[in-house]
Amino acid sequence: MRYFPYLLVGVLFGFVLIKSEAASWYRIQEMFHFQSFHMFGVMFSAIVTAFFTTQIIKRLNSQKALDGQVIEIPEKPAGQTSYIVGGFVFGIGWGLIGLCPGPVFALVGTGSIGAIVVLAGALHGTWLYGALKQYLPH
Image 1 (cartoon, rainbow, N blue to C red):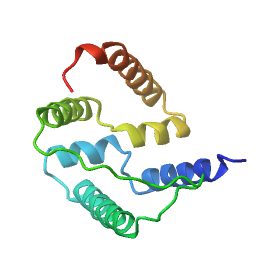
Image 2 (cartoon, rainbow, N blue to C red):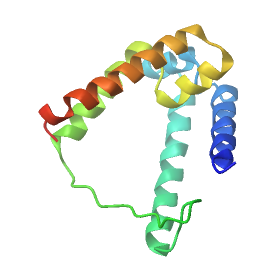
Image 3 (tube, rainbow, N blue to C red):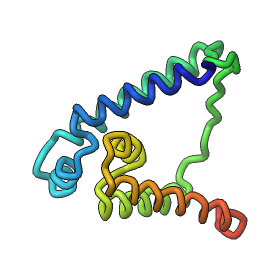
Image 4 (cartoon, one colour):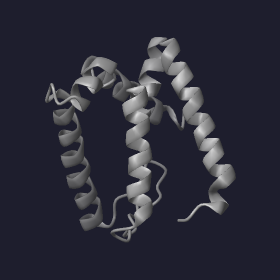
């Protein structure tokens, strides 16, 4: 029962992704071909929401997570090459597969076989990163 609120929010998030067509391969391809504003609008609203939420948490300093721990947002150094390389790799994968991590879980929940294959690849890539992390520049 401790994790039930997280499960509930995850299911709601997946429902919104499916109903808003943010998990649609066709919508994502439209975005990459600059044929539709739909996905750009979804991402812009997510960026604005995340920005304001982060600012509120930083300014109030007393915000706590559901388990009672204080939420701390450390400052990140600007202009690091790893952000550019990571973004490039993420973008290439997103363009090739047509999905990013959030919609993969939502599509697995709908029973999509293709999404299960993508999730298996993402989990393998995560494992591979963990195995090679000590050899990579950070």
